[in-house]
Image (cartoon, rainbow, N blue to C red; front, side, top):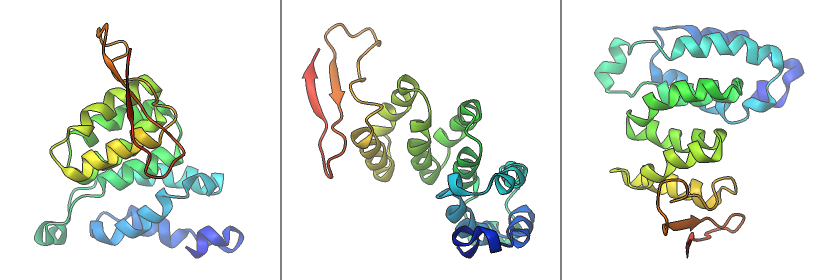
Length: 184
């Protein structure tokens, strides 16, 4: 946090070393990755450029012996979110989303938030099926993202060959707002 709040005094080398070390347990990298993933747009450009290859390597790090012993999940979800925040290339998100969508509950939850970085039609194609996910947490996140997003407004049924389909018209900007249905 000190590095983020005081970038001129920041020492990034320990962070680079921690994230780049494949023998560090996933839970040892989780909090740092989460912290960096959130305000990544405020990181200095040189830090972003240095973190991109490290985070790309994190995506392929196998679980350590201790991770398997403690049944710790991988950092794939948070690393994907961090990478998306570091590099705004939408093709990278397109490449990583299929793995998130077929992954764990935590990874599918992250997919709901990354979908908003895509064009509205693609985002909707990802979010609507996640509203019916088997995990309640994924359903809740997907529904919340649809409701809070002004980009995914009236889209359900549009372009899916539904001549008289129902639209989900998400109301945005209101806390606890509810989607409303309108006949097309």
